[in-house]
Image 1 (tube, rainbow, N blue to C red):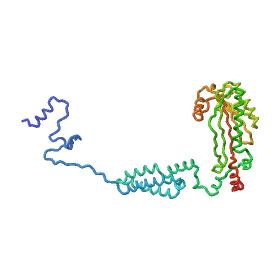
Image 2 (cartoon, helix red, strand yellow):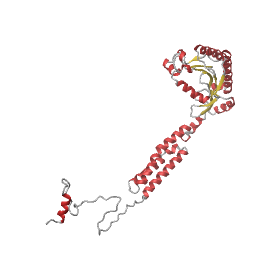
Image 3 (cartoon, helix red, strand yellow):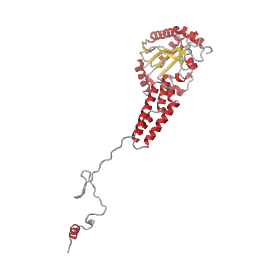
Image 4 (spheres, rainbow, N blue to C red):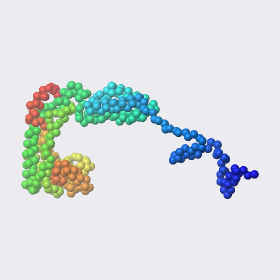
Length: 369
């Protein structure tokens, strides 16, 4: 007699050669049915439904909060010290000890399960804002501003206020031309050169920039009462590209400057200057004055402080276009023509007549300097 199980087995097996065997009634021992997340758990009739609940995350412990608050407060202390300019305090023993305490609290929080998240946040804060990084920022700020008063002795502060310049005899400063005298001499010199060249070559002129006065450092970390003077530059509106014309222009300028008590003109761009030919080519575009984009001539009235410069810019000798870009950038800053002749005067370590009395009075505070 054929049982129901044999009939069922025959129904599955017939015509299915090679198919896997039919599992026994009730399935294989220990087998599980894959449960789709879209359907509720499968239960057999009469089987109680087991409801599972999600694991509730426990709140962070007190150690985690202490680590976070400590990291934030320490960062605020560092920033406050930075804004106050306390570079010395940042590298003090107290600040380093406080940082070690904060780091210890953060490490303790990281090793606990409930404090790990807040400990990690506190660690990130201290990695960004710590004694090393904030101290470096403070040092850069101090260097830029020159504010080192926290580390300076009274003697150093006294030296910083020295009105003259280190290793320069004050009598030399008092004996040379004043700022006002140099200004007047430069105006007269530049005016005579412009008049001479306008008469001979028909040049017209434009002023490029304005007078510039810069304080001179005194060699002790402070500023002296002396200034560096740069006159307004004067430039021709016309380009000067002919080689012979350039020589004639410089010869005419040479006559004027010698009449004003300066030495004869000296050419930096000429091979006779003594500069290496490769350096001349790098500075002036070529080691041959006939193909140079820049001519630079110079003279002075040593031992007086006045120095005179005459430059010719010639874009016809700019083979690469790089010099044109340089001149365009300069034109954007000062408004000077792209090419042509340019004249200027520079003088260093000048004392204004208005400051002479105060200068001599302050020198009395520095015997032996």
